[in-house]
Length: 232
Image 1 (tube, helix red, strand yellow):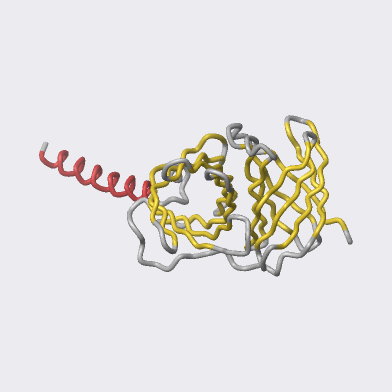
Image 2 (cartoon, helix red, strand yellow):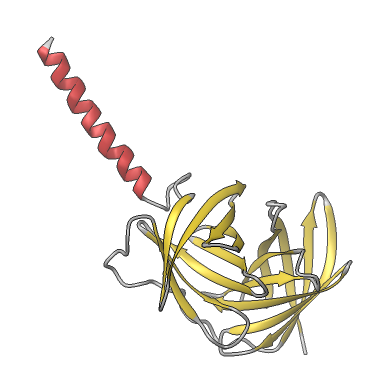
């Protein structure tokens, strides 16, 4: 009997360690949701992530700040809304933290780390800078519910890797603020009333083609996006 208890205890100890490791590794399925502390260059703020759709996340940060995120591999693309402004960000999901860069509509770029267990000692890992964003036109195709919707995206640089965006939509023009890194673009887009808004990301390939997704805050459904750059 004592021998059986010993082996059972040993098994539970191994299982417990394995389970705790799985909980700690943010890259593993199901571990990204939860409570975080966000560390910026001059701020710390409580942040909560909840999976609200297939690789779509709802964000609450402090009081009165809301957001939506799309996960793609080890990247998390965010659109966050404050009282009267929007921010877009590209983040890298690491074992112990989520590290990234964000902008709120001008050339300024900020770094941020999200962590569930204090500030890990390793340096913040940010997306590699890509080639300078150029003034460009893109033809987009949104694949939603079996339908295809054609649109035009205009990118106007505000800095080396930051930009403003205009997206032609059936209801009118959507405005956006964006940031680029690791050959990805991330756009926080919104309508005139700022009531309809969301996140759009795409990978910008060397041949000028685009592949990515978009989602609206409150809808939580990813929509596939394809596109191509329109030659000047």
